[in-house]
Length: 218
Image 1 (spheres, one colour):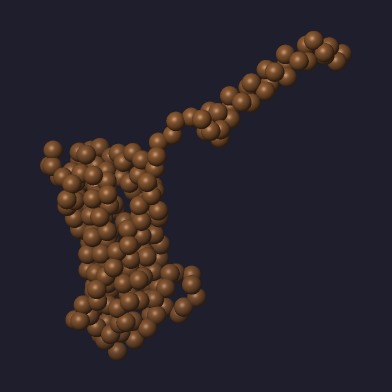
Image 2 (cartoon, one colour):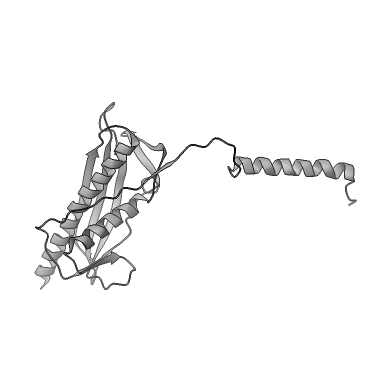
């Protein structure tokens, strides 16, 4: 095949350069285009230890919570009606909801001073019990049309005896925290409060249930 003449090569190079520029622009790699501003939200829930929680001498590992992809996303899910699930525009989580839940429980148990060791599964500790979590809901729900959203979190928890993998106890936790307004920062504040409440309820249940099993087994 003969080489292209100079008069042909120049238009071809120009066409290739134009196609490359169009592809880069379409991928959003070049500046100049209008972009939506995205705010990253990072709730920081804190759990106050309850004096009634028992002090235990066993160790616990936390598995990474299971969750559907739509729920466990960096996008903030909102349910304007029972059959409709959307996401807030221009707002993202800093961490996935499953990570936020696990972090909340881990810190609540550690800060409680009631358990000698708690860690994520695979960390290397010799755990006596294992917590398995299934996160079913992590979304802003509108319980009534025209009303205010509520930060809704639903988690099924199973406490397993590590030695024989038997389920010691299981419970579903559900908490809905109403937002003060429909504005995204107020919805995020409601999620912070909901995580704190759920973390407190689950931490108390873990310690109490695990200790009851431990006492009954000896």
